[in-house]
Amino acid sequence: MKFHYVLTSSVTCACSEIEIIARRFSIRDREFLRRNYGGRNWRKLKDKPYVELHDGGSIRRAELHWYECHGIGKRNVKIKRWLD
Image (cartoon, rainbow, N blue to C red):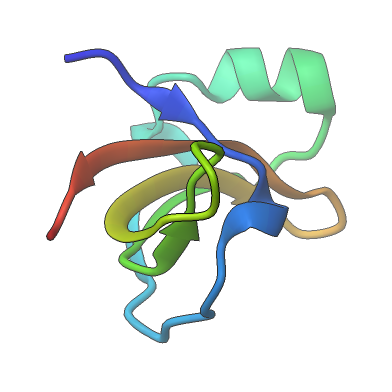
C-alpha cells in the first residue's frame, strides 16, 4: 500500500478521536525524528478526520497517522486508509 502525505491545512474538521499509538522507545523512527527535528518525547498518534483532496475539493474521511512532539508540533502526517 502506498501512503499519501497530506498538509495539515487540508484537514477540514478537528475530530476528537485522537489515539496515541506509540510513545518514546516504542517508536521505530525515533532516531530519524530526533536527528531531523530535535525533541525527545515523541508520540505517534492517529485520528479519523475529514480531509479535503487536491482533485477539485472533494472531501473524504481518512485515517491519519503522524508524529508529534511538544514544542515541535505535527510531523509526517500521512493517510493510512480511506474510511468511506
